[in-house]
Image (cartoon, rainbow, N blue to C red; front, side, top):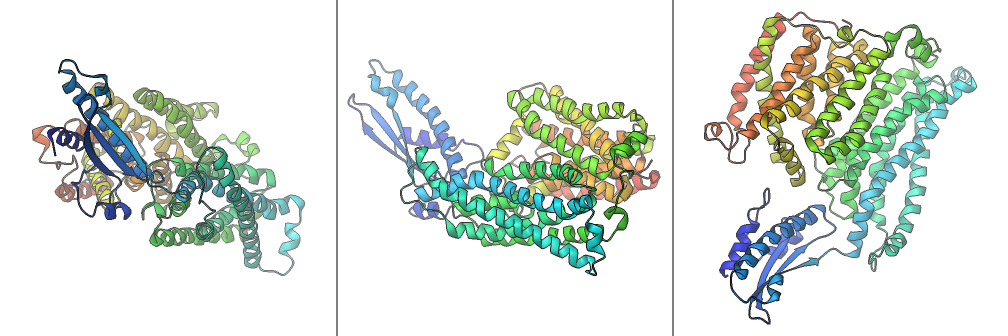
Length: 602
């Protein structure tokens, strides 16, 4: 191997978050088993001008997202190698023009037409399937209970001698059956026309056929999701006074499901045991894996099992609602109606309005916030915090003529709880970061995700400005919404349930499944600090410290004095978890002692 080839290999080894392995006799076997994502071969030859040209062959699978990402990274890095070699050649006098082609990069596509078709189907069919399933179920569910209320036929059914449990189960099975029927008919209609559409788009579909076995597997996985949607929609229909109200209640579920289903369009996010636990997302990612024949049976079983567990809770809630007379026969004067809000503006704070508000904010974050951040990251982050998260909440309270100080708990805290907050916030940040590292070690995060996260903490702006955008702005704006506004929507359920629900919404709002658990745990602490003390300023301080610590570690990771706390991979040393846990427990106990329990209705 000559010096130029060695230089090319050394340059490839500089690609962050990727490992370059030396040539081995079993390289092809490793590639076929998906242990490696690409094979790079280098050869040289003499040009007509007597110069040495290097031919680089990259073997990869275009139907695999990770493989395509690796190819893109290799090609970018090889472009730098080409420039370096060209500079060396141009130093010589009388260099022929063919020196510009010193590197000849050629791709070897190993994906079959079947896998290419599966890749295309796996991108958009999950989204279409999930929406078809939900819309088919919603049409039936709204009519079965809310429609009967509107037609005044529900009373006749209830006095017919059939038990309410039997009525609920019958309606439940009806929704599932018609939803799955709608899904199957539309799915096969789209799938059979897909091959023709792809051929018309210029893709070589010779030898490709409709993956019927894969579709049958997916239909089996879709059945638990159909039961979950059916139970939720039946609960909404039972709670509604008429079909118009039921349709209104269905919109947040539709919007959230659409956003979760769109994960199939995102590159480099693949199925794992962790992702298999998240409803809707698990079906979308499983669909992608099945269509290119890279799914695991364990993922299929976890997806079905976790969804069935949620089904049990959903159908239990439906039965509970159907047996509650005050809910089944609600009048227009009940709390939560428009008339009630006009009479008593505080009645705006009910769970339904909270979910609607959350759904709208989530949609704005996903579309408008993502657009802003794509145009200019730091300005987009700041605009998101102000104009999507904080300002709408403040304006809504102003419109309702409610006291912002009381609703948002903008009350000055006592000194001792303030002193204890850093002793909870810093250890908590260390603990959740360590937990994230453990999750990453078991279920590795996609490289593209890690790169995007790195860009967030390494923006090309002064450190003080990064601190204001990453730590202070979220610490203030997100707390106004999630520890100020949202707890009011769920305060009738008590302090503990309130903390859990708002923490779940807080984690979901970050649109980051890889940090969902860590953010949820942080949300529990922030909710406890606010509701226990009655002051939102404590959670604002704690949130700012948490984000600021992450920024601090990233900014000073290269300094010698911090190496005792972080490893070579810029991760926290695991031994920090033990003292952090001890300090956190002591500080939490003292905080609990010095703060009086504040009710959520305060």
